[in-house]
Structure formats: C-alpha cells, structure tokens
Amino acid sequence: MSGKSTLFDTYALEAEFFEDVLASDVSKLPSESHLVEIGAGIGLLALKLVARGYKVTAFEPEAAGFTEMHAMREIVLSNWIGEIPTVNFIDHYIDDTTEIGEPADYMIAINVIEHVPEYEQLIVNALRLKSESATLRLICPNYAIPYEPHFEIPIILTKNFTWRIFKKRITKSTTPNPVDFWRDLSWPTQRKLKKKLDNLGIVAEFSRDATNHYIKRALTDPKFIERKGPIIGNCLKVFATVAQHLTRFIPLSFSPIIDCRINGKAK
Image (cartoon, rainbow, N blue to C red):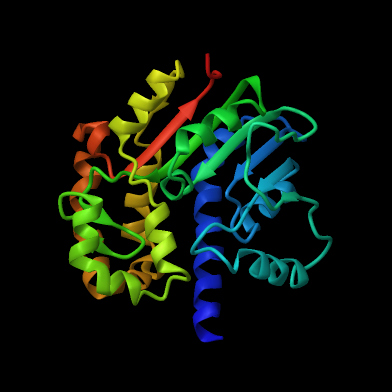
C-alpha cells in the first residue's frame, strides 16, 4: 500500500501543478466552457476544473504502465469533501468515431503523446472535437534532451540502443508492465512534432511557458525535488538555477518541455 500511496500523492501533486500551468489559458474562458482532457489519469485535474465552473470531458483509457488510474480515481471520488463535481469520464481512446456532444472550447493533453506510438493520428482525431476557435494544448517531455524521465536513464543514441544498455533496469522497474510501457514510448522532440504537424497542414505555436513553470517548481518545491531522488533532484536544482537566467535564449528545439498550442484544424 505504501507504494500505491506514494504514486497517488505524486499524481495529486501533478494535478495541482498543471492547474497552475494551465491557469493563463483557462482563466480567459467563460464559465461553463467545455474543456476536454486527453489522458486524465486519476481525474483530479478534471474535477478541479469542474469545481472552477467549467464543463469537462475527460478521456482515460489506461494505457500500459497506467493500470491503476481508474482505481485511484475511485479513491479520489470516494474521499471528495462536499458535492462531487460532475465530470464526463470516458474510459477509452479517442478515435475517428468519437463524439462528445458539443465541441470543445479548450483541449489539453498533458504528458500524453510521448506514450502514443502514432501520436499524430491522436492529434488529428482530437482536433475533430474542438470548435474552430478552440485551442488544443500539448505538453510533454522533449526527447531532444538526452534523458528518459519515466525510467530516469540517459538516452544513448537511439531508443533501441538505449534499450540494449538499460534493458535490465527497465524490466526491473516498478512501473506496471515496463516492457509494454517502453514499447509505446514515442520519444517526441519539438522538431519531430513540428514536422509532423506541418505535414498535416496544422499550424502550431510553441512556447517556453511550461518549461518556465518547471524551472520555478525545481527552485521552490522541495517535494518535487525529493521525489526525484538526491542525484536527479540536485541536478534539476542546478539546471534550474542556471536556466532561469538563460531560458529565453535556449532554442525551442532544445527546451526540455514541449509546449504546443494548436488553434486551427487539420486541412
């Protein structure tokens, strides 16, 4: 139970963090706007957004490595104090037949596309569900940085070569279904994502907003650093101390976090 409790606490803290990351966008939306979250995890962020006055549809199909999401969602719901916010939870993937009743006014996919081998199709399917003026915001690690954050290992040249070097560590990971989890990782980079979107005729805007939030988090949130362990945690603190002064000079293609906003639809 202790491992599950730690995992639950991690997801709860992530929901709180990303509520802050999204605030600059979400605060501009009128009350009762329809928000769609792709990859809702334990559902806490979706519940928080409904509590703020928005309507939320949340997709969580439980991909490899995330097999406890629905169980932890039930823990959240059963321990919610007061009236439970009503979220339209949908426990399957978005595909080209998915319907959500009314177009989305804002869509988010946080730390999702790196777990989807053919994530460009997910993006196309998601864009079908939004209104013409709505934004789809994608946030995920940038694998141009030679570090795999889920298994906390350096990237050695390619995914296959990294697997050969770290196979034992990966397979012995506490991540549920680590081999399937590893197989599904798509290793997106800002350049690869931009190229895929360009090929689909999708115009996107990339920013450093999420990276700046992570830098602030590394400098001000001791729980975040503690969860990363002494070696990674101290490296993050050193990086954040330097990056806070240099982040605006770092090319977007080498920003550690991909933060992408899509306002149009695929042509």
